[in-house]
Image (cartoon, rainbow, N blue to C red; front, top):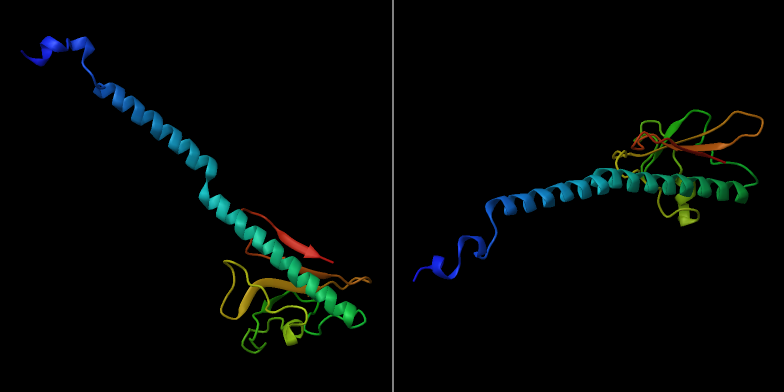
Length: 157
């Protein structure tokens, strides 16, 4: 007796090649939709921008606290010219004329260390820029020019 005797052609167990290919195609389409919906590169860029916003606000708050403790005076290194903030422990001479905010990190009174941009920092600079406006009511402006996804991160107070 052969298998054909027990299982006629229409009732044999298993899947046909067409059925398997169809299931694989459906799974591939669903996987592509999920990958596009999640978009890991965009998620990473959004996470970096969130870190930048937090860092910019941290620097701005530290400068504000410094001003409160020093009768409204900002650190002398902050000028009306937009300059990159130097990394903690890097001198202005080594920072390419950047802005030295070591007054904020001395004795860890306002900051333990100057935050650095997740992707736009260098060996000497943080990737964040700071200046004071020249209006009658001067404001500190801190920005993150390396922001991704065409986002502008610029905070003033």
